[in-house]
Image (cartoon, rainbow, N blue to C red; front, side):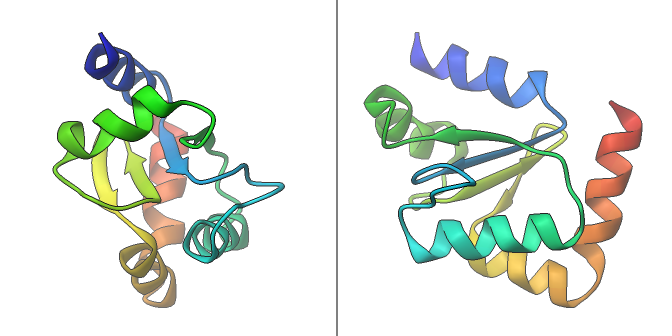
Amino acid sequence: MTLDRIKQIVESHPIVLFMKGTPQFPMCGFSSRTVEALKAVSAEFHAVNVLADPEIRANLPRYSNWPTFPQLFIQGELIGGCDITLELHQAGELARITAEAQKAS
C-alpha cells in the first residue's frame, strides 16, 4: 500500500524532501527554494519526485495531514513546506536540526 511505502521512505532516511521535480531540476518555485535552503546548510537529503509517482503525490497529504508540496521530513517528523523551511533557515535552526539528523543516522 502507498501509505506503507511513504512511511518506509520517511523512516529509511534522516532527511526526506517530497518535491515537484528533482533537486537538479525543481518543477516549482517552492520546491526550488526549499532545495536551496537545504543546500545552503549542506544538508544531505533524499528527494522524492511526486510528479514521477502519482500514487505518492495522491497519498502523501493523507499521510502527513499537509495538503501542499514540497514536504520536508526530518527524522520521521513532518517539518513542513517551503515557508516553514525558509523560516527555520533564516532563524539558523535548519542547520542545527539537519546536522543533528545526519549525526543520528
